[in-house]
Image (cartoon, rainbow over all chains, first blue to last red; front, side, top):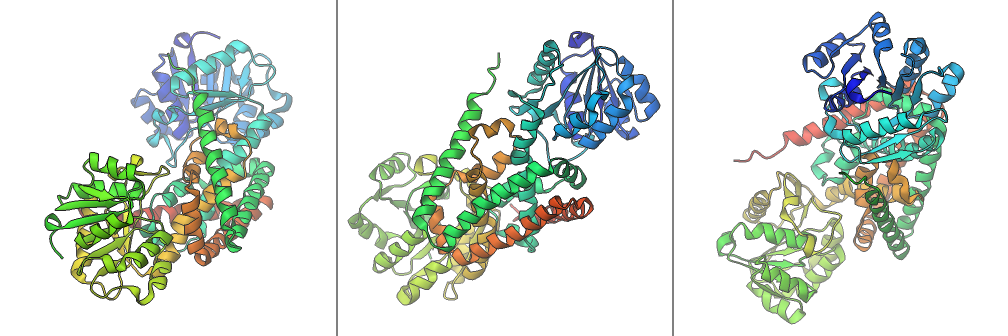
Length: 297
Length: 297
């Protein structure tokens, strides 16, 4: 793999995430950035804002662009990522490094099967950042600051290409990189991300009083900001990780049920004990993450 | 009621909330601020920092202080508030305005019964602000900025005294004051505050992996910050508002169960529809609150 300053980098999808990644990568001085998005207006805006040097919104343009790209960031939903990889597999440049940002990983690898070319290096990834806003117009690379970046490398990946991706995402602002398997990624993300979105949505869903925010002191806002959800994308993520998500919903329901029982049966001492251990556990979780922060030069 | 600059204001309890309220009130130029806290070290620190002009940590001192106070903020837990009002009812100055900050309201009024003196004006209140931190050392009046303040006036309250409290809390930074009954307060707060704390606690409770924060992208942090809970205080709040809280847990469980069912049965179209309406509802809740913001001069 070439150095970033000699590389042509392609972004497939310039939405909130693709747009923000391209903005951040621009600051790393790449040879050239090319973009593909189904919306021509997005290509126009991204070019005018010098986020990309050029791009296309049609298939012919994409087929011209891909053979030039040394590095490709696929910034699409899981199903679109899979469809893109399947449809354009033959168009990648020999030796190209490909990465993606989807929130579920096994579904892509399993469905790709042996369609993956041996002369390209596909390194699945997942930047743990986002926003309740959508689209290129809301893209902002400051969302990456001090966040986790998960990589789920394949056994065939070249170590130097994994290092390249790590160097890029560190410069983007991510301060902790986790390497794991697609299976573990999907298990863990079902809890930290998908379950949290289901809970937030259910909390808004169950309340009919639109003026309930009169009685809000911060907690309700914090718990439901992510309920302003991209319904199609999250339904796709939920369905693609159905088994893990259902297990996590049930795990959460058991704890909730037990707390409800303690309240119902007025077991104050037991509840104080339980809440004390919850507090300690949550503090420990935060401290453990903090200790893993990459030391910045 | 005298003007604030001629008034002696007493704070009963100088923890996170009492401390922050006293700090904010100091900026309004009261005649004098006196404080009571069971911890002598807190009285010492608050006096040294000029948050209070003097105070006491014992009952004898409290009995000397109360007859001087034109306005009293009781900043204790529900049970302690009730115990304080019962024990020191005879010590208040004739004509004094008394308010409190407890997160449940009916339990106090019901238990006070006819012990409330007719020559004082007790106006129950609830500032909808807080922090996962505790104690005077963490008190900071910036937590009040743009928050809700709920008042649950009694039929006997003097309108001019209600106006006085409103003027004070507006200057403290609260930008929306809600007047309602103790019963409605307790119903609504069971949802916006207590249910949110139970959910946050259950979410931490159900996860055993302390390194789960490796896979965190903001959602888990936002949903569980309030799980760093003051176990005794929140158990007391949950138990004092048990009936309302149990109803709200069950309401939430029904919505969660329905979303789980849609995921289980792969009803993608129905889930997209439901999540779309959740998004719209949550946006509307935010807009409605925003529109009610007090116009600042």
